[in-house]
Amino acid sequence: MTGRKLFIKTYGCQMNVYDSERMADALAPEGYALTDRQEEADMILLNTCHIREKAAEKVYSELGRLRPLKAEKPGLTIGVAGCVAQAEGAELLRRAPAVDLVVGPQSYHRLPELVRAAGRGEAALDTDFPEEDKFELLPKSRARAAPSAFLTVQEGCDKFCSFCVVPYTRGAEASRPVERLLGEARDLVARGAREITLLGQNVNAYHGEGAGGEWGLGRLIRALAEVEGLARIRYTTSHPNDMDDDLIAAHGEVEKLMPYLHLPVQSGSDRILKAMNRKHTATDYLSLIDRLHAARPDLMLSSDFIVGFPGEAEADFEATLALVQTVGFGMAFSFKYSPRPGTPAYEREQVPAEVADERLQRLQALIARQQRAAQEAMIGRELDVLFEKPGRLPGQMAGKSPFLHAVHVNAPGLEPGAIARVRITASAPNSLSGELAA
Image (cartoon, rainbow, N blue to C red):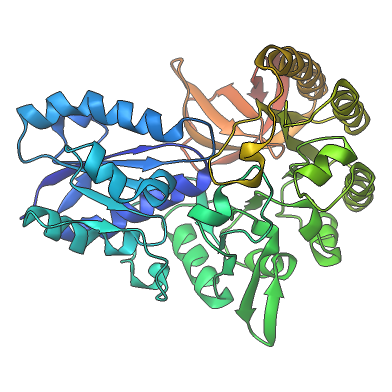
């Protein structure tokens, strides 16, 4: 059967965005084409994230909202994929009768057979950690790639931070072979990508098999820089303990590696970092930042912070504020601690909600000031901008600077994928404006 429509709702990280694209590739030979209109879909997939509190309940709420659509359209197939699927498994099928299939993040290459099983009225559940390489079993996409594309190079995590569910939902660290990644990168460029962001739960823990043995992320980046037509390289998300010498050097030596790095630290307190099982200190982190800036002086940094982690005292929070002041982040993401069942921190005594709320507001105010200062420092500079799509205004194009700032320019003649020199003229809360340089 052909001509069926597939709607995918993606939650969470960039790796889920990549996974959703590959799930669409897996279902294309079954006759499914993507649609952005949920009401016209023959299949709806929820690709879920389990990193925040009550993630599963949010999925059940969404499934409740889909129940009337299922009643109106009996042939509609509803599936749940991703980390909530991995964590909840058969419970999803039990609690939400509208769900036809459940597939974990390591098994989405088996989607076609799960869809067929669901069509026969059979149980369609797969949350295994299979031995086969899912990436090798997926069909190649023929769709045009976005100017800025994602490429998963590494999955899973062996760090076991005490607040994190990733090792339990994504499994152990695993790296993809070099030649397969280079082949996929060349294919992305052939289909229109100008920039590739390398993805992994712990991307700088990459250790893939390549010519001459095991390659680290720095060597992989150097090889990707040789791909003709690829203009920009980024990677996310990293762990401070996996920033080796070669990767640090690559920031100063590889022109295509953009001067922006997301490097989560989570806290500025050594006591809390130890309770988080981060296996580094605040001093270790600051020393690493010094080394990175020595390699690439204009490197802009972002980070993640958890406020109100169990046991966090005011002095611990003040240490976090001090670290933020010292580094001067271009942007950062901050959250209240979110208890995740099954993690070591889950049973610990919680910081009162009102205390965590007040600390989060103080931290976010500081981060906002630093972000505003970083953006305002761009005014008057000329930057190469990769344009990705039309903006909201007539004739406007939107793109990204080397520092990952959103940039809007009146440039009706430019097409997505163009890289043009832009003079920055103004800063808004989360973006920059500019004009094409003469």
